[in-house]
Length: 225
Image (spheres, rainbow, N blue to C red):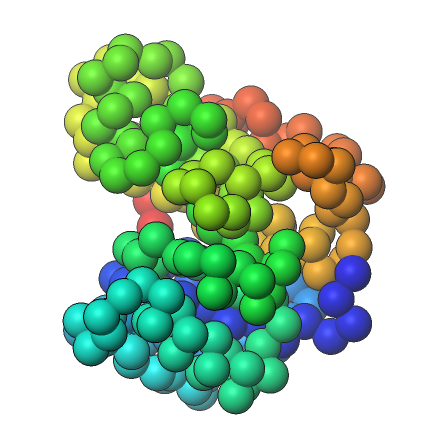
């Protein structure tokens, strides 16, 4: 359990999951203070989202650093300057290193648009369509040194419909991402997630989690944001 959750969010793009986190905090559904949003891209719209809510933002261009480790050391420096004790990767298109993970042990979360361990890496929705799966979804997990590999906290399933494109499936999954990321963060903050090897055991919140396993009729029709 985090005594007081001081959250840092790392982004690279539009920041819709960041917005879901901000909304959950403002609606008192997520007991956290969002201290800083960091992006490796100056044009990431997520920075504008944060600024509209009075949240501190920083741009740290990755091309200014010779190695991933040097880059992560600068990110850690910035997170510590804002007293962050929990980190969320929300569309952050960088592979993080031990430098960041050791600074925040078991305190770095990521969201991925697939039901891990299926379809890790880039273009997960395209991978799902090409493989021909009938169910896809989203996963929130702890980050380790392997890509999309750490212990799974929460997953939500969505159907893959006849005629789906990569974009339509991505939109349906995104709707569920916006539900499960704030939920997973809250479970961690409230001390309801216990690590047992590579398993993240969720204690409490069972009914809430079960409601996410099977997609609702609304999810089957498509998603709106």
